[in-house]
Image 1 (spheres, rainbow, N blue to C red):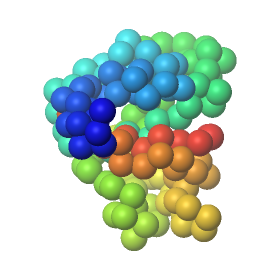
Image 2 (cartoon, one colour; image 1 turned 30 degrees about the horizontal axis):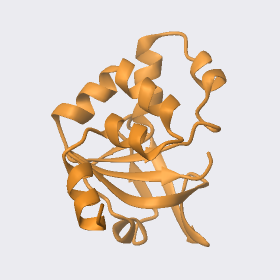
Image 3 (cartoon, rainbow, N blue to C red; image 1 turned 180 degrees about the vertical axis):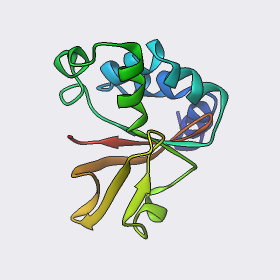
Length: 136
């Protein structure tokens, strides 16, 4: 499949579907799917999603959350209202997550969000874009 065809396909998919297809983000995708945050990403937008990989967002991370409300709040820390491609992030120092918390942007050796390096930026989905993180 050409890159143009791949982008078109991803633009038609939900954030959870794209993360599952990309691989390595199954825990985060599952948590989104089980929460109201996943519904929010499918019905509203645009949103920018900072997706942590499975080794950083694992069962022990999810196990620390005792309620659906706390899971939703934790997931909202990874979601930013609006569409912020990598080039836009480079010009910012702080961005406000859907949780209301501020995320710190730094540009030293690549772009980092709260100390997590963006490994694969600007992955499209039907309501916005996803930045795949290397680690938390």
